[in-house]
Image (cartoon, rainbow, N blue to C red; front, side, top):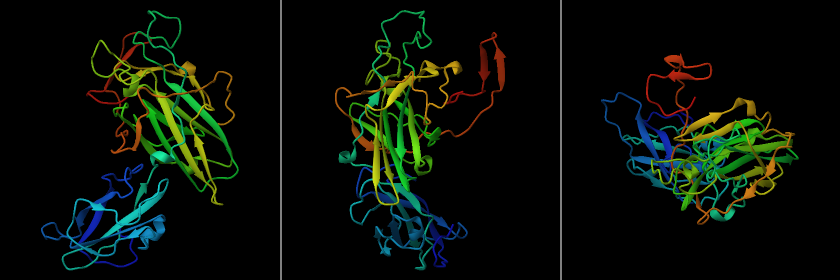
Length: 374
């Protein structure tokens, strides 16, 4: 779509805008990121057209960028063919900001294109900006007991149940901007006021947790309201403490013994005030219907244990306990913004056949190998 106020008849236009090779970075690991784009010909592909110059416009307002106003950086017309990446040429980008940017190109006839549809970038947090602590459920040894057991959470795989965490917070007004910065040692799902945030699956991904962990920046402005609010999260073992590989001498706990959450929410109000909600010892935790969830052992979900309204205000807290602050061994991991596109659901499949083996066991045949869940 052409969003420039200037009419243009260029043979080429910029498409597939990328910052740090991502369509929408959920945080940056550099104050001077790299930008790139692809070219799309507006005429027959048999006609050879190419870029002779480019211009990047960046600001904090999408509407301003559409109009060609670059409050953060306007490179101006820069002579040069298409390159894979262009380095940011403005002042060092601050943390905790949402930036919009667009690009305009000139073809071989020196005719400018329209400005491309603006793309969004979360600048993320620097190491010194983090105030949150790693938190998790109090430590429970997954091993050391024989089967069968007498509790729903016991299993022959010695896999831990998922942990549910929550924190209530009252706001004096609805925010004009709210950004959640979230990571986990293991896997996380974030909820606010009963609403699942984002479409990421298996976030934040696999890293060498002894060295670094990646975080995501999420726009949660519309999830908060004036008055009482609740932030919730579910954390699972994932690659951190679950089963990976086939080393029978070390089935799990490759990096640590229990998952942990790191969460910091920046809330900005119309009068300029900024509040920060962080994961700390004031959060609460309990176990729920996910009795265990493991990459190799699978997942057991007991719907009788559903927690009604667990991530909404005024939840019954009679069975919730305080979390523990966790200091991961052997050291705190370095926090980096995510470097790859998140894993998402891409399709929903119906089974080809359903075979009942008993009153309580059925086989669902999807007709193909797949990575997914029921």
